[in-house]
Length: 272
Image (tube, rainbow, N blue to C red; front, side):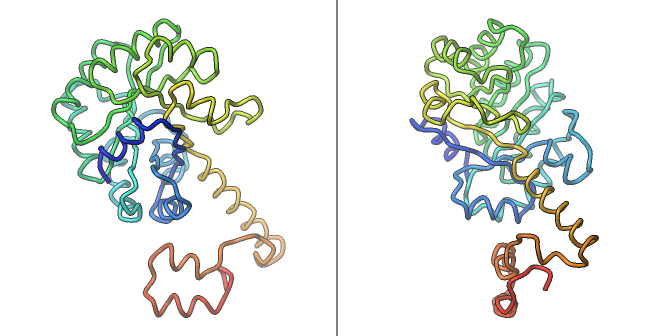
């Protein structure tokens, strides 16, 4: 997996959905489903490792350590990872990017801060000193004109794409596309928002959106399944009524030895 693979997706004239992963098993499942890129978010790490909400301070070292454990399961599929507020110094941003690259991460989602000039300087440093990792600049601004200005500045500084946090509807995306016709856009699909009224993939692609992130969809689904399983065990004494993947499927996802896989094929439930 390389930054070139991720940049190719950003340059393509199509939309790519990017699901969140958080461990080797989820990474392997995403790849087997056919996804062409995946996302390791600070939210997913905070939820699965600490059981706490992410406040924007998941450290770079923790993200890099987790990425190193799951990249072998990705089979060359590019991995995007968050870099939240806190890397204000360009040197710190470069250190983070290089650490991410060594961990197998192809692209960094870099949050901007209160100072747009300083944020642009970080991107300039990344483009010059860490070209082996793609940069997606996450833009936070309370004003639409401010968002456009920041997106333009970050693209000029060397960002490969921009992610405007507060813009996801047709009107805003249309205005942003008109102002920055050559800049690839990335959007993050809120896990709490309803699917009603959402733009279609074709509509998003028409506005220049190239990646749609789904940071917590699989985490929430996994926790829901675990909750149902635990409740069934408490109430019924087993989880026979809960839909689960076969044990043999788990064996192949986690690369069990061939002999163990053969044994597992004799059963069709994880807990049997």
